[in-house]
Image 1 (cartoon, rainbow, N blue to C red):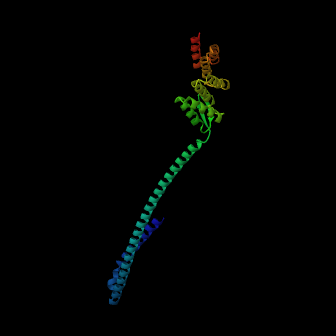
Image 2: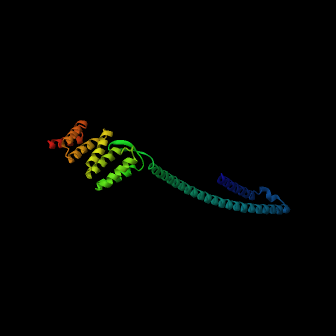
Image 3: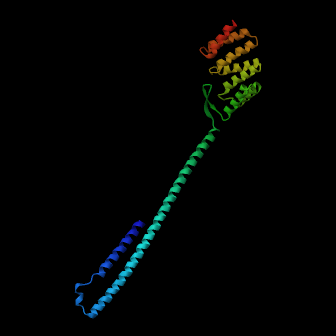
Length: 252
């Protein structure tokens, strides 16, 4: 609106100058009929009008120049404001992106302290923070051949997370660690707990097969045969049942 008003002022000044110019040349056709006094007065009047017109034209030119300068100044201000607006827009976009990244990172951090649904040996369960890391550390000890350390770690895990979905798997590996330490009786006790407490767990048939191995290590051949037959009957079609069948054939 301000720029439109300035353009209107410039147009009005130019129109005023044009009207004054026309008046300069509007001398009556019958001027020759005036007498000398009238002629001198007419010249004086004409000179006055000419001076006035010159002043008006000079004022109009100054006005036009001033208005032009103001237009230039306003245009510079508009350009500066446009640049500031672009900077603010870029800053806002950057801030929004930073906030989004911050809250995504915060959410990921908070989730580490919340129970999470996980699948362990094909069975889903709610895992508490720290469970997975503790279990994996114990399992890594077993894989490294530190069976005594692994046995201690799996026992600690069982005590610390009694409701953990890792329990059947942790007990199974505890039984294997005790077997590696030649504690066959202790291994059988732990593995029997897996079979009795978690009979439908994928580790149950493997635990029962491992019990038969413990019995053979203790020269309990009849008991081992009976255990192998239980594997075949209770978990028919499983890989453990096939392994039990093969081992039973070797014992005959």
